[in-house]
Image (cartoon, rainbow, N blue to C red; front, side):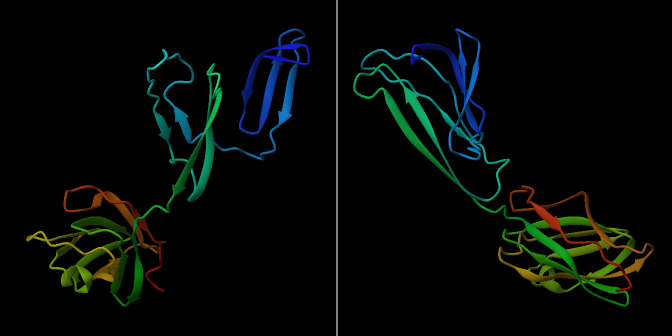
Length: 219
């Protein structure tokens, strides 16, 4: 690359600024690209260079990775440089919308005497569940959305188990009391714990779950 009589060896971008290496005097130039943070690590391509014969195609895969992104809108540009006399530079805009992660919310409801409410808000059809409540011996679950949906629910030691013998599900959008359960507390905090359990759909796929805060059995 030639510029004002200098020969440049390399050019790179660190996500904030452009850096140019001068081959003649080994100087490193930093240029502000005007962007505070391009944050474009979420887009990548299968190859960064290559050649194509006239009249032929070259397929390049574009990968989008939202695993480290917050919910929101993201945009970037893939620029292709070539020796095409008509289109030597082609900019391809890339846009990505990242949605909020949907998950089942499970929390404690009202606690009265030796009875507690287990609350649920599910955006998925739920075919079965198993989880623990640490800090208490559990017994005699009954009622709630689980019973209304035809589930068999049992409680033993710290574990609550629920499923349907007939394949019924707790339908997506269900919110309220999952079940009521009796308990004898042996700790000053009651806390949810998935342990070796899971919340699953009809294909036995595990569903994302978020448990609410621990509570005191005396509240």
